[in-house]
Length: 109
Image (cartoon, rainbow, N blue to C red; front, side, top):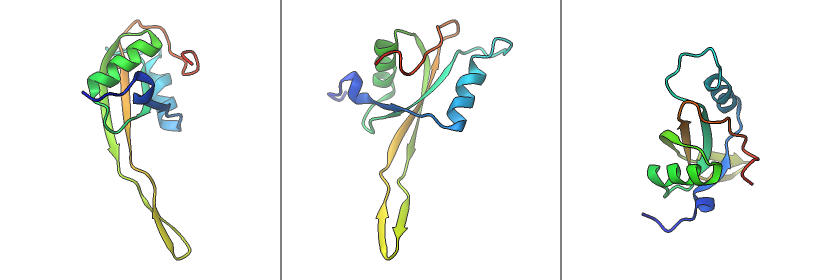
């Protein structure tokens, strides 16, 4: 286990079209999903799934059903003759248990 605090593990929420659609569709009352709301976060690259789960539970006071992680490799970008590389990062899809209250990202700050 790494020596990261809960605030070091969670870098920022991911607010993109895909993540907002995932969050809204997962909270639909008429849905027959067995799981609850899906939240998306950028996390520390060394953070493990159990650490991410405990950080979410501690910060937002909810129960987590599952955590899925994805590693994104930084893309090569050019500006004229200069070539650079965007930073690589890790993203976590966190599924809350069914019946947990809806989470707003700004609540815990």
